Image (tube, rainbow, N blue to C red; front, side, top):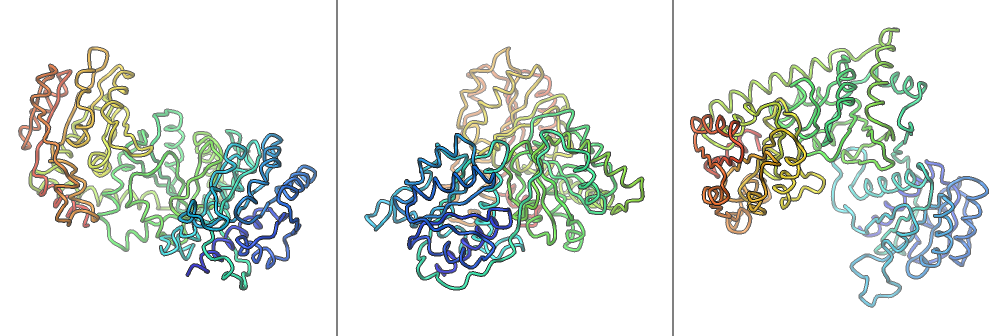
Length: 573
């Protein structure tokens, strides 16, 4: 119901602010902010200052925070009320005063539709606040939350925004933030809004190194827990690699590294999707960690994210030199604003010391995960050995034979997903445009990587991805040793695999959209060595030539539909 949306989001935001020490609220009357006012009145522990004029309220809040050195909140209705806050918020921004501005708003679909008291509120203060947030009227209202912590994604979203807003307002150089809340029907939301016990995301700041006391406190907590470290995309970092090697040697610690994490650890750390697919439900339950620690960028593996979102009683910690934390598991409890290298190096020593002094390790978690990996790897090897000639078989051969000294650049879509399944080791460095996961710039980015690396760079791409910039072939000269492998699967192979599109009658025409690239002729035109493989024997010979020959392009062909069906069977989808 619409009414419950306004109540739930208001309750989550106010509960988080109260729990995190924001107890002074400067409120201006209105109708659109009714849910917030009702929620404030239900909380006797909060101090409410009612000031009709929003401009005056904002300056009063500024003065209170300035003198008390405490964060304060402003609450107003929709329309021009927000714009009256601007002078005081500008002052707060340049004086570094932490004010949480909460503004009620109309639903976005009614902006510019001649509806009463509607104007553009989203981002209205963005040049004079540290960050702007929006909570939409229908943000996940009908979506059940994957995590068991929240009843709906709507409540998770409001909770996450409130936690992050307070963290940003108070972190490093303090300052104001803006939360714009859309309410569809606020007057119908007047009912009891008793406080709830909210999820609080705690933040620890280490100024690049955590204190000994903090490390000991965290070590005491982790030493008896099953700890899983998950690494997303990162640049190569030898110091972090050494620190993680020490930390992951502890008996209660396991690690899962994505292909583009650029961590060179035991081979058991990779092939995450194959591991999670090829073990039983009972084994998956035993695999659930007590604490998952994430580092690096966004995760590729949807299978891993879904597994952790459904892992009951798992805490999520993030570690990054940033006040911003990602809550992709929907269960974040701690963000550590510090260097991951310093954290893992210090934590390895602190946990070992606790263990030596009689602390009780959760013995066996590392070995248990290693055993599951070995089981999954055996299944994977047997499946690929016995399957027909497909992309799965071809790319398994490619990844096994890829020289360790090479750089690897992966296109988005099918190639990065196969890499997640099949790379039991990573080469010198692995890259992919996973910041926003676009298909368009992979070829040119790979060329840039090759220019910067003195050795050989391999671009592994699909025919649809390669079609965005085939003129890359004319750029490569003696300054860049780039070699290219194109999986020719007659267009967007991923659309034959994913559930959203694989059964659509229009799939081939509208989604897969075969570019029909004349790769042999393109290679010849630009003076490249053209190689071709459409069975295992040809691929074996072609890889020999590819690894020996600069300016070479290898086209791998396999039946597109059979490849998709084989991948679906492999992943039990």
